[in-house]
Image 1 (cartoon, rainbow, N blue to C red):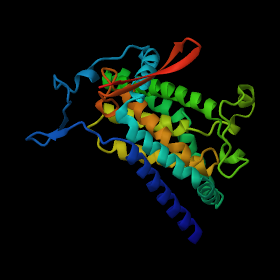
Image 2 (cartoon, helix red, strand yellow; image 1 turned 180 degrees about the horizontal axis):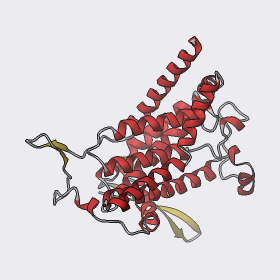
Image 3 (cartoon, one colour; image 1 turned 180 degrees about the vertical axis):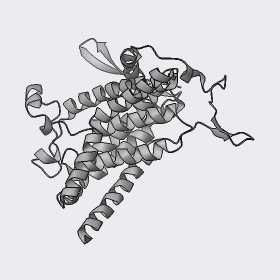
Image 4 (cartoon, rainbow, N blue to C red; image 1 turned 90 degrees about the vertical axis):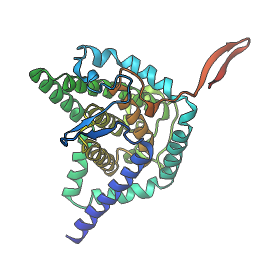
Length: 314
């Protein structure tokens, strides 16, 4: 019983640490929430018309969950190379570097907790399964069914955007995994796992877990789903704290099961938040992930080969 209490305590501490990572990377919600004289809570938008409900009153096209994905990729790369993102890049890099240094020790401790009891093992496995996509698509189905039955455009929109962000963000994560080729804790042949950049893709397909640790797709898509729901229902205050806690537990469970290192998560959090915000705001790129100053880095053809063109827009 004493060890079980210690195990639960360690889980809580780890969840708190992961929540601190999320809070350091995710901007605060800027949508104002006000109450009228009768005490009824409402939400106001910062657009010119001030009509917050308007986007939610329009039923999305059935194909929007798929046809919007290329646009999401374009918006993501449009906002990625901007000067105002330098602090975010530095934060992600610093957190990743710091957690890589401690990855072996932190994984050993978490794994020891995982093996402490059948309850601990099932606990980690449960939260790992929560992030594997079935939950996200299940939520999308629930929102979609409710929206169609009750003619609720906001619920249908939420369902469509969940599917959209899971595919859009998940594809980018897979590209990064195929580039970085990092070993998972379960397959690691070095204390923090080897990195094989641009691995042989045939070998990758044969031994996926040997190359697919970085970044975490589970955390990316789980957080993106939370952001989509929270942005569509900003008046429901508890969605974010509950959603962030669930995401943290998913992250912790995957370290326990040996699927990920803690250093796989800072970039995943940044990706999940960005893609969630992009999907939830098809009308325009939200201010929280955009900026007027922009750094462009593009390939260019020169006389004797290829080079890079760097441009800065004020």
